[in-house]
Amino acid sequence: MRSNPEHSTGILSFRTDYNAPHQIILSSSGNLQEAAQNFFQALHSLEQMDIKVIVAEEVPDQGIGKAINDRLRRASA
Image 1 (cartoon, rainbow, N blue to C red):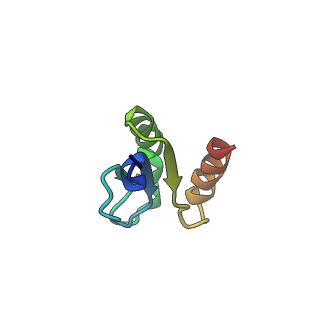
Image 2 (image 1 turned 90 degrees about the vertical axis):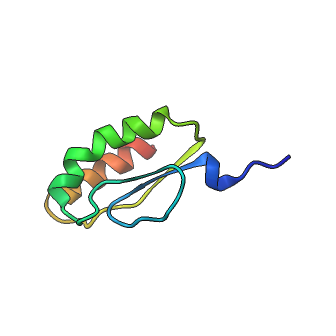
């Protein structure tokens, strides 16, 4: 029996709702400050889910968004 990739993948998105079962949106309004405040809790929450892979969407690479994207790159290494 093959597993459904949709149910074994977590999604960390900036503001887009992909209507996925294991998704966390950092800021539905697109606020980089809010995204930064939610970032580490979102990663921790995804790590607690029964998933195999986390797909993360980069945020706009400006201001505090540069720091968020840097952390995403480091976490993926």
